[in-house]
Structures are given as C-alpha cells and as structure tokens.
Amino acid sequence: MRDPDEFDACYQDARTRLLLQTYALTGDLSAARAAVRDAFVVAWHHWRKATRHGDPEAWIRPIAWAHAQRRHTARLWHREKGLSPEVRATLDALGKLSVDQRKILLLTVLASGTLADFAREVGLTREDAERELQTATSQLAIHLDLGTPVARTLFAPLAEAVGEVRLPRASILRRAGATRRRTHTTVGVVAAVAALVLTGTAVTDGGGVRPTLDRGLVSSSDEPDPQPEPPPPPALSEDALLTAAQVDASVPGRPWAVGTTHDNSAGDGLVLPCQRERYADARSSVALVRDFAAAPQRREPARTTVQLAEASASERAAHRAFRTTLRWFAGCSDPRTQLLTTQRVTGVGDEAVLLTLRRWGAGEATYVAAVARTGQLTTTTFTTVASDDEARARPAAKLLSAAVGDLCTLPDAGGCGVAPRLEPMDPLPVGVVPAMLDVVDLPPLSDVRRRTWAGTEPRLARTNLAATRCDGAEFRGRGWSSNLTRTFLVPEARLPAEFGLTQTVGALGPQRARAFVEDVREAMRTCPEEDLGTDVSRITDRREDGEDLTVWRITTEVSDDQSVEFRMAILRTGTSVAQISFVPTADVRMSDDDFVALAERALTRLSRLPRPGS
Image (cartoon, rainbow, N blue to C red; front, side, top):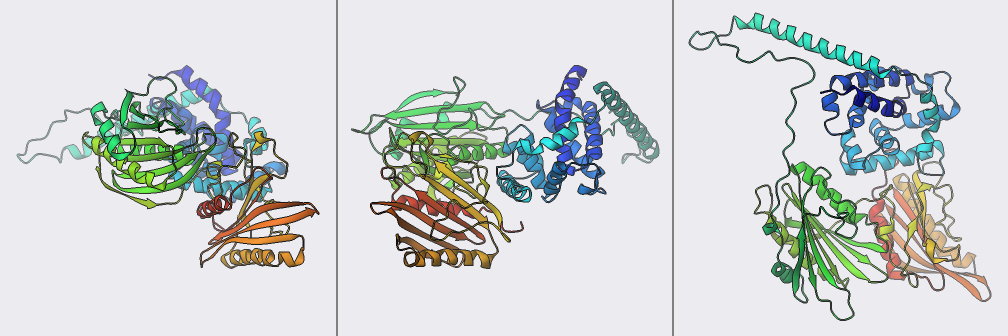
C-alpha cells in the first residue's frame, strides 16, 4: 500500500538536492525542474517499487537525469541568460567533462552513498568509476584553477540558483501520479481487449477447438508484475571452516588451537585489522568467524590466524564482496600499517588475491591477508606473524587453498582449491587519486615509530614542492594535465617545518614526458658544478623505452658547520611523470632502500594517471 505521508516526506527532503544534481548535470535549470517534477510523478505511480530497497531517492535520480538530458539537448550550457559569473564558470567547466565523469563526480560530492553504489548507478565497474572520478576532479580543478580539491562548496552558487526555484506541492504530484497510473491501466486494458478481438477468432488448437482464456487480462502498464524478492544467501556450516590441523599444516611454528567460532553478529563486527564494516556484502548477514591462536615464540608477539567467511545471494554480489574485502586491506587505514606486496593467487577458487602488510612501531608484526571467492562464498584467512619473511606468502596461499577446498563442499560454491600459484600484481587502486601515493604506501621512520603518517589532500600543482634547488622542475603550463601535488607529514611528532615527503604528478605528450625527465637528470648531473655547496649522489637509475626511474641523495651546505641531506626521485611511465622528495631530520630518517622501494611503488601507481586529453 502506498503511503502519502512517506512520499511527501521524501519529496520535501530530496527535491532540492535532486534539482541541484540535475541542474549540475545538464546546465539547464528549466529542464532540471521539469525533470525532477516528472520523476516524482513516476515515483508515486511506482511507489512500492521505488521504496523496495529503502532508498527512493536513488531510484528517482536516474529518472530525473534521463528526463533532463532528453529535454536539454537543444540548449547550450552558456546560452542561459542572467547567470552569475560563478555559476557560468562552474557549468562551463562541468560541460567539458564526459557525461559519466559528470555523473560520478556529482554523486560523490552531492549524494550519499559509497563509490560502489555510485558505480552501479552510472553503469561502470568500480575501477572505471575510480578512474573517471580521478579524471573529473583533476580536470575540473584545472578548468576552474582550484587550489583545493573539488568539494561541495564549489556548488554553492548553483545551490543558490536552485533555492529560488519553486516546485509543485507534493499533493499535486500525487494526483498526477494517480492519474498516470489510471491512464496506463486503462490503455493496457483497451489494448489487451483489442488484441483479443482481432486475434481470438483466428486462433484454434490442432483439433479445431477454440482455446479458452483462463487467465485474466494482462495490463500493458509500464509497471510490471512485482518481481520476486532475491533469494536469501545460502547457509554456512561450521564444518566447512578450517580446522587447527589444517592451520598447523600450512603455517609453521608451534601448534595452533581453535579459539572461538561465531556468526559475527555481536559487538562492532570488526574482527580483522583494517576491516571497515561488519560485512563486506552489505545486503547479507550470513557470516562465520573462526579464530586460532598459537603460543608466542620468545620475545615475539602472539601469532594469530582468523578465518572470515561470508555468503551472498548471487555470484555477482559475492564478487562485489570480494572486491570490498580487498579494498579493506589494500587501503588499510589502521595507524602505522604499510602495504608491502600484492599477489594474485591462481588455482584457488574463482578469484583470489594475497596481500602482505607490515605494522610498525610498538608490537611490530606482519599481516598476511588472503582473500578468495568461490561461487557465492567469500573467505578471508588473516595471519599475524612476527617476521616479514617473503616466504610467509606461500604458507598463506596454501592455507587459503585449504579454506576454499572446505567451502567447496557447500552447494553454492564454485571453483575449488588446488595447487596455489603466486603471481605479482600491481597494488589495487586506493585513495581519491589512485595514481598517487597513499599513507598505506609509506615506510616506517626512525625515532617516530609510535607516530603515524598523514597526507594532505591532492591539489592543483601551482607550485612544485617536490622540486630541488638543482632542478627547479615545474608541473604547470601549456600541455600539462592532471597535475596534482600532495605532502605527507607526521603531525604528532613535533618535527621541524622542513620535514616531509612530497609527491607531484602530471601528464604530458610522450615526447615531452621523456624530455622532461631528461632535463631533470641533466640538471642533477651539472648541479655540483654550478652550486659548489651541493653534492649529488645517484642511488639508482633505470632507463627503458616506456619507463624511467632515477633516485638521488642530495646534500646541501647551509652554513660552515651545517648541511641538509634529502632524497629525490624522478619517474615516468608512458605519458605520466612524477617527482618525489623527502626531507628528513637528523634523527628522523628513511633508508635509501626504503626510499627506492617507495619510488617503485609510486611508479606502479602512476600508470593510473589519465593520458593527456582523456
């Protein structure tokens, strides 16, 4: 049954928000107003369908956007009269983005939900949505010459214009929706009767007997018969979880013992480090958790292993749960936690990935998170060990294979676990700008092991703070795109103002990108000759057709008895270039090996930067 009060409350709450989003999408206020009005009329017609999943606004928005896009095709963005300069500039900049880029940007900034939800609404994979969002934010920042990331305040001038628009009362829209429903029903009945009259006399069975019509008339209304609710997720069995003997066989050391087994319904549900939500599949609550413990070795933290298993209503939902679980670890937000490696596990289930992380500081340990999907089931085995020995990945893959093999006994499972094989892969995209370093990439520092890194938001690279006195490189001017910069600090450590790590990225044409890197290399080569107080030592140098990576240690004398030492890297992959600099203090330092590894990580992420003109 349709509830008028519920509809009225939804209309009152969402109409201005939807009008702003639709106006920003099309740049046509009159088309946006008519589209939002029509969308709410359709919503009342199909109110039961609109409220089925508890978010009618998300159901209404695509209808409003589709109606507005059809209405405004003949109108140009900057032909409306009376626009303020701020509104005109914002609409012009939005108009230079593709439709998908505008949609994903507007949803992220002006709507409530997750990026996965927005990707489904636009019809993109999450990876494509992240890439389109990154391109949209960087291009909008460039077009509007923004010094800060795109935020809701950017749309304040549009919101003022929308606030002056009068929309019909909810009762008027309900009457229009009811009329629409009656009209569709009447047309459907008339069409069905006409079809029966025209064709009924000509239809007989093989024996010449006229068939009877024992089913009621089928309405041609655009509201189909209610679809059955999706089937519930399959049940999980404790017998399909790992045993202590299986953990003993895969993870060497002292004997393991089963701790507890539960359905993860108590407390906050966060049973693993880096975990962000109780369930990776937000529409399922079918889960089992089993933890194992082993007596610690001398002077080492306790070793633990946890298995988390979830069931989803479909393989597609399970795939989303698998990707969500991976993002927990790939973008781990726990303090002092660094992503070391990401490896694909083949031969286990339908898809599987293993990630190794390091928790540094007090209680230093290594995390090995192995995630797999088999059919409608997703499982994670998470082991905490004391060493960062790379060989730990093989036992973890073996343990994951055993976990998937057990789940394969359930009817809704898919591929089983056989002989697991590990293959290196690029780190998964994380952060607002996946082409840039994130906090999870940064190594520990000496003398501040109880503190944690923090990063500024990426911003337009008007000034390149990663440049040195030797090269003075600039990431701006004609030909540059996606030029952004950010700085990482340790805010609680009370370090000198000059301390920090800065990364600047940007895209150029292929020849200019190669020339840019060579110019920096030449400037660093000649710097000691031109600046007698500066010493430059090259730590590593790699030159390939599609990639470049060079790292230097620079020491500059600032007085007769004082000098400053820092590290800088220049890197390129295709058309994307980046510069990274780290300024330490006398006590808070980063080793050469750690800085080179960080530059290598930056190079793998840099490949996600949009090409010029994309």
